[in-house]
Each structure stands twice: as structure tokens, then as C-alpha cells.
Length: 468
Length: 157
Image (cartoon, rainbow over all chains, first blue to last red; front, side):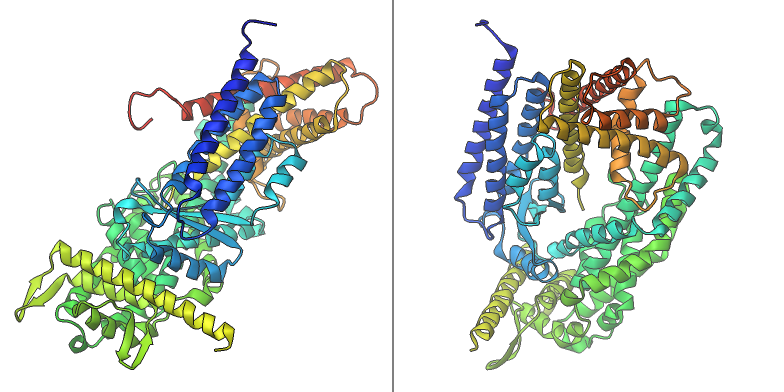
């Protein structure tokens, strides 16, 4: 027997890694999570790790063993998804909103919300990622055996931990919910002849611009160059579509709150920055413009302007009218369009986007019909909810006891935005600026209201199902 | 508003990396006239499909024709293969890559049904395919190694 074998060393190293990671997931398993999805994810990863351990035991291929160690290291990154998904770090109201929406439009999906240290909202269906990572690590029957026990989708939605208690900004969840809808549209559109036409036109136009370079290439270098053109165009096109469709969905589900949240996020941006690798986000000004178009088309902007000033807490009408003017001024500038024309790739991809986006927005409208915000809420619920906020009460219901009615959580969030945008309150008969503590109080009141509204609705549903 | 592609990219690299390792090992067995198992045949089929995707990817970027299929797998396969292919001496600068890789894919497809030993021409193709998969593994392992640097000089990794 050899004194030292690199293969044996790699095997032991892998088994130690696998055991270590299993223990870390085990430690998190018993936490109090708002949904069962974190436990499902841990179960699945544990199943994969058990099978990997079996494969390590039976393999003597050094390269295979090296890749297993890379795979286990990658899985280690998933710890952060579940680490803070427990109720201490993830307010129930956030998960309740997401479940309320996703449970209606995609009942087969399972959801996990987690706060991340990075200042970023994101959504990821972890199931296809795990399947893809392990597809060739195991043979097909073993792979199928592991995954057949689990649901169709395990969606992870992250939010910036700094903003954990800022329920108003979480209107951005509407954008994240839009991503799978955008992906569904693109999956269908990619098989449509229109996709090929769009790609061909865009690629040939870019090749025309770069003809001087192309004429000097042949063989593999030419394939590489053309691949970069086609791949680049598809990436910029798809990323632009994904973001713009998702923004539109956000406006459809959350109404004007979606626009206020985007304004809050983009306020520090160069509004005309062109899409850049690796994420290729569309210019922020274009995104605000499209959201505004959706809201204008659905009557929200007109409804906000028509609110009776005398019914609202002092300062709310004037401040929000000024903010809407500011937003109009932003979107009426068209510098972003000029910037897009400076690169042939971006220009062609965005000409393509412009042609297809209206069809995609129509598709999204149908997909989210059951969870769409209603413009009537602006007039029927928001003024009373603003009055409640002004009195220091959660904006959860309208009417006077005993004739009260549970409000829509979208109205509660919109009232919160309008009140916070005003950032003024009456003290001793005078209108004064709110303190940061006052703004925190708005977040807390709206958070409570949303929790109350969703629990009340669930209870009413429970009674209805019981025949009560 | 997200960085979804990072996970998807790593998943692709691991997926193709495992395929490359297994394909190289099975091709080596076949070249040594060792008996192949059911699992080996499954690997060969997957490897043939992967080479076919590279070939179709090369044709797609030339013609911009999709023929009603999605582009993802073809462009992803072509992307991971181009760098390793450029390191192979046996591919001349004026080679039609789509045809060349298409022939290797067809050869892999026939290995599982072959009864007798490989002809010298077939052996050359299988050796070349094994070299390509070896190159792809090295390329992907380097890329994964870069992503998983353990000792870094900043908190950014």
C-alpha cells in the first residue's frame, strides 16, 4: 500500500467538506421560518450531498473528485439564503405579501424570502440551478430519483437587510415577481419566427458596422467574433426585456407605489447610463418612463391628481403633486435614447426591444390579472388611510366602527408612500418637517397594517371555506 | 434587480465540467477496447449531443438561423468550447468548425453501437474528441478555480 495517494487524499478532503456542509445546514434546520420552503431546500441539498458522498467513495477519477469539491464549495454559498430566512430577520408581512401574490399567479411554486447584506433585491428559482449543477455529476436515474420528490419551483427572493423594516420600498417585490413572467414570455417568444427575424436584423446591422474587422478574420477567430455579436445581442435584448417587463409588472401589481420605490432607488443613479456588462440594465430614465406610461394608461396618475386636497392631511397633496411634476420632468428628457445609439450592439438590441415590448406587456397584463392593483383604490381607500396615518394609527381599515371594512394592502402601502413623500406633520397647529423617527413610525404602522389585512383576509377565507 | 446570472453561469460550468471529465474517461476506455457499461453509453450520448450543440452553435452564428429551436444550449456549448478548440493543433485556421465538430459528434454517436474494434480513422476522431473534452475540463476548472479563490487579498474575494 502506497504511503501517500493523491486520490485518497482528495476523497478524504471531499468527504470532510461534505460532512462539514451537512452539519451547517443541520444547524439551521430547526429555525422558525415563515414558510416551509427553507426546510425543503435544506432537505434537497442534504439529499444531493448524501449521493455525492457515495460517488466520492466509488470514484478514483482525480478530475471528477476535483469538480466535486468545487460543487460542494458552491453549495456552501447557499447557506446565506437560509441563514437569515427565519422570522427574526424576515418580517412575516413581507412573506405574506409575496405569498398572497405568488400563491394566486403560480400556486405550484414555493417561496423563501431572505435579507442579504448586499443592497440588492433579487429572485432566483434555485431548483433549475441545482438540477443543472448536478446533471452530469450523477447518472440520469440517480439524478431523477433525487429531484422527483421536490416541487416544480423553489423561489428565493432577497431584499437588502438595511431596508428590512421599510415596507414601502418592498413594493420592488412586484418587480421580482415580474421576472418569472418575463422569462415565460421570452421562452415562448424565442420559439416564434419573430425572434429569429429580430436577431437576424440586429446581427446583420452590427456586422455591417464592424465589416472592416470581420473581413480580416477566418476560421475559429471568425466564429468567435460572430458568436460574440449574436450572444451579446441576445444577452442585451433579453436583459432589457426582463427588467422592463418586470418593472411593468411591478406597476400593475403595486400601482403608484412601484414608481415611488423606483424613484427612491434610482435617485442616486446616472439616469442615462447605457446597459453595461455583465447585467446590462436598461437606463433608469427609460425604466421610470415605462412605469409611468403603465400608470398613466391605467388612470393612476390622473386619480392621484384628482384627490380632494381638503380630504388629505395637510401638505400631502402639494408635496405629491410636486413629486409627480418632478417625475414628469425626468421622463420627458430623452437623453437616454441618444445614449443608446452610441454603441451598435445597444442600438440594435434596443430597436428590437422597442418592437417587442408592447406585446410582452400585454402578455404580462393577462398573467397578473388576478393580483393587479385597482385604480379605484386611490379614491375609495387611500384618503381615509392617510387620515389614519396622520392620527398615528395603522392604515388597515376604512369606515367607522362598527361599519369598518378591511382595506387592500396595496392601498396601505400607497398611503404610506404619499404620507412619507410629504414628510410633514402638524405640531401645535403648525406644519413642520417630520423627523427620521416619524418616518420610521410610518414604516412600522404600514407594516402592522399589512400584517393585519392579510391575516384578516386569511381568516375570512377560512370562515368561508368552513361554510361560516 | 439581480445577479441571477452568476449562479446560472456557475451551474453551466459545473454541468459541462462533469460531462467533459466523464466523456474523456469513457473515450479512453473505448480507445483501449474496454467494455462499456450502460452508464458509459449514457455519457457518450450526452457527449455527442454536446458536440452537436457546438456544431449547431457555430452554424447559428454564421447564418443567424434558429430553425425554431432555442439558442441557449447551442451558444453556451460553443462559448465553453471555443477557447479549448483554439489550443488544438489539429484544427486549421480555415477549417469549417461546424462541419468538423459535427463529424466528431456523429462518430461518438456510432461508438455505442459498434461491435468490432475502431478503425484507425475512427480512433483518430475519438482521440481528438477526448483531447477536446480534456481541454474543456481544464478551461472550466480554471474558471471555477478563479471563482473559488480561497486565499484572497481583499474582502471582495
